[in-house]
Image 1 (cartoon, rainbow, N blue to C red):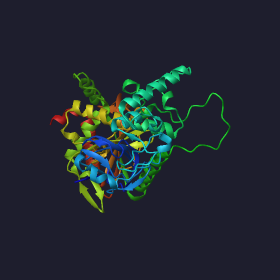
Image 2: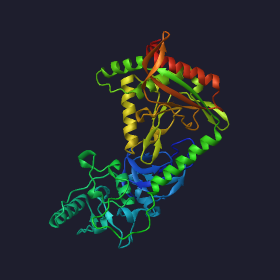
Image 3: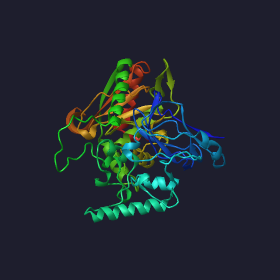
Image 4: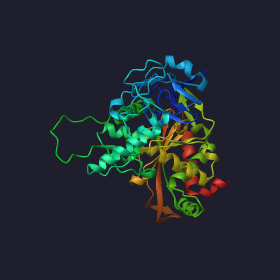
Length: 445
């Protein structure tokens, strides 16, 4: 029986998703768990994995299409069923096919038009990696195989070298190719920072480099559609939160002398690369376990209690802001927590988050201390009840035993949705967090 590939709900308030790029084409063999399509929501672009093994068929959503959550966008049929399903398999016509040079795979049926390209799935994958237009590859049999694509790449390399250009094989991620096309850049001219020199999304400049000969002035070029869309939707969600959630704020300045000592000790542990953010996640998780009412959400006019302590970290990226989640943070040893934080943050910045990475968050931490910010008020991340804003650590004059002394402190600001959380409960939570920050050994109690 065919398995449906549906537009997933990656976030609680998500209603639609945008198909950014198909990593597989109709007729390609896929394996369960293998990425097959990139989906963009208002917060993140993620790779959706195949829910079953088989052959990809009946792709109904082209690249660039905005699809409601829950709608089927393709089918995966078993190898034995592929023959019976091909007659209904439509040709996928991505909106960006002309820009990327990719040729949609034709349906495997008789009477294929003369312009259709026959190629093996591996040949298509290699062609996509190297930016090869399969329509330019000629073979004696009429079907393009892996060796044909590699031979074509080598011939282009030789031709480029003969023309005085340092021809080279170009490996790039699908998102990098899409961004380069949107920004009018030659992917082959970019320096890649990925494995083997692969061009990643972060390697693509935000604007095209000027040509040697200045072109004729033209109308201003609009910003890349993907960037504008993500930022616009993020702005709409924050506006909704600000205008519908009654915010209130609690502020505490905490002494971090012992926290700094804890960090020094943690960094001496073998294999543990720990940051202040990791310590804060650990402390917040402990405080939430003692004040579970703060680990709640406002949904459908009622308070919904979260069973697990899943903490989101606000991460700035070029396209806006994403909040990857560290699940069950209260159960993780500090070294493992630090490793997970480093993993999800790096993948967020590289645009490689998985759906599970952004789901299930119950509380968010936003840290701007590294930018020299003393304190700020964050907007609640709906439908969560609260978000913690963290300022920088700085030496300040404080009273100690009745005497003025200089101590390292930082300012914690708790933003709360008054529909889900009242001032007394919020104050008790912040008090516990402040006490744990000033005396981390209390975690052992």
